[in-house]
Length: 558
Image 1 (spheres, rainbow, N blue to C red):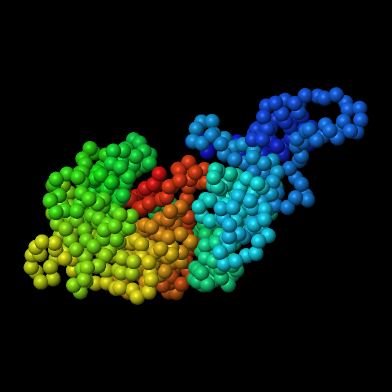
Image 2 (image 1 turned 90 degrees about the vertical axis):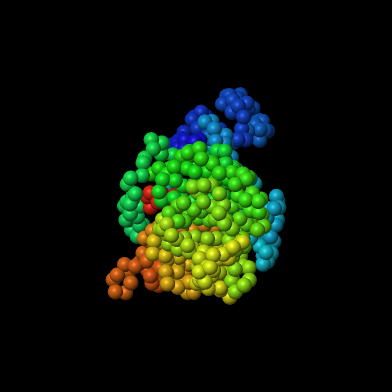
């Protein structure tokens, strides 16, 4: 991809320029790696052409005005000075970085007019409750400070990259300027996200005293993650075949090529996994580093679902394997664009037919669910499994497909609420998953991730603070040591291990972690890759695989 060689070019260009500062302007013009986007070949050739010696001061002044002189980059009188680059050429072999401004300045200011094209007068306007921090670079960049601009810092290069109607890079004149910019950006991001000024007191209010280290996850102690790589490479399923091609993205695109947009992935522990798309379910074969289509496809529009089934009129958004992976529960949303549903369909995978439609009901009243998952990580392998967990905005419960009176249910059978809790306050649950022992991890709209033990759905043992973005999907490893949360713009990887006061190592599901919590790791696309992915470049459904705890599967909506 063009991004790799472009970054090397950026480093080379800057180092060459520093070496040439002591040479004459003519030699610097000849050796400059990047072309200026504001210059053309005619201007370059005219500057290299030797002119006649002027005969008067008037001619000298006129000559100077006609030239676009190139001044040295180090101007001690210019505050917040940077060199601005723009990436051009897209995802092509000819893509490259070009100099947009040889020397310009950046500033942060608050404004309530985010869409205004004229930022000069905004910098002097009075602040109000609707004001937001904005980054302005020269006359070419104006962007609200938020995670959407995908800012990434390269400390060794004194450089930051970001997205704002294009991909930009700023090169700082010294290390202090670079550090100062990153610090100010993080402060502005905190205030725009939480609507509090970025002070230690407010950070304590947002994150809590036990999670103050989450305020700067990029500055976390890496020694806490030393064993992560070793634990991720251990696989309990050594019998899984390995394909010669290890490109997971290629495998996903191959499997979903004819199935439309992927809505859900039902990851199997045995030979097969299942991709639920707009038009049906595709069976794919599991490999240790990918999946591959088997040519088996169940179309939602076929007549095998029964006359009264709603399957053909709505696309399932969630699929759950059960009963030794011979059955699948499918959730069809009541309203298009919203995840809530009043029931689900039970699909027999071996016959490809819906064998039953179920209703969610509590105390004789229909209720909705937004997500379902297995009782524990391995429950889908139980051939007689009949229970599963359900989640709604303020509900966490367990459902039983067996009739509590032992009577066979006719017509539309009703699921029995056997255990759970309905929270009175707005928890805004979004998604959840279970570990091998039945412990539950829940992601919320405010970005919080809560850990519940396997014997209580009422009180979370640990609640990780949000980092500013809603958690849309969450997963946990079988042993409960690692949690993976998905947001629109990044993935968050959390280690739940801690040492209690007795020196024992536990997970956050088994006890309160207190202040013995390591900061998370944020995994996101580079600004360049994010821009290339298009406008709707949101992550969806990242999860740990069965084959290796270290392989992440993320469906990137492009």
